[in-house]
Length: 239
Ligand SMILES: Cc1cc2nc3c(=O)[nH]c(=O)nc-3n(C[C@H](O)[C@H](O)[C@H](O)COP(=O)(O)O)c2cc1C
Image (cartoon, rainbow, N blue to C red; front, side, top):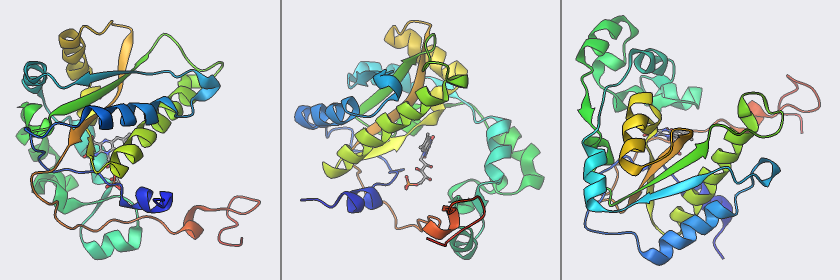
């Protein structure tokens, strides 16, 4: 039996090109959807629908949508960056700055970064993936009395993790593309896929098989003692 913790530790974001000619087998797709199906959701609302996009022409249409990285993204992204492996190892949260263009790494260069940010087709981000899964939710509904529908969004996160772990066990790579949640992108995607206005994009994943092996990179997580508080806030590492 596969060790569930091992599957969780091996799961990772695959930010590499996928083989456009290698489809995800139908049976694997069913299993991924089955995993999504059994996710826990607040009040068992099952507050999601999934659009499976595998038709080449539709993928091409979506690939032509253009999007530009916003100033807000670049500005807020600075806070997540480490500038060396040593710094990342020490912080244990965030991402290495070398994953981003030079001007994105230096807050003093915000103006340059914004200026350099041009609209680019989504095709570049879909990067050969033969399949997209677009998870949407009904924005007119919410979990009972849940302010901002926080419980609804947590539920969507459970759906994401369930499907991701299943894909991982099947040897299928997953990469989340949050760019699809941007207002202008979302509008176009919804038009292409005939999605009603009241439905909103929760998250989009591209699925497939990498053409090349992803380069080894440092993956960090906080130690349990860094986030676990015993019996009162601040009482850390005393279990
Ligand atoms: C809600 C959510 C949105 C994310 N959006 C993106 C994204 O747009 N692009 C991307 O490359 N990774 C995205 N990620 C992946 C995270 O950056 C990634 O999970 C984190 O850095 C940890 O790396 P790992 O998945 O390889 O363990 C997202 C993850 C989550 C949970």
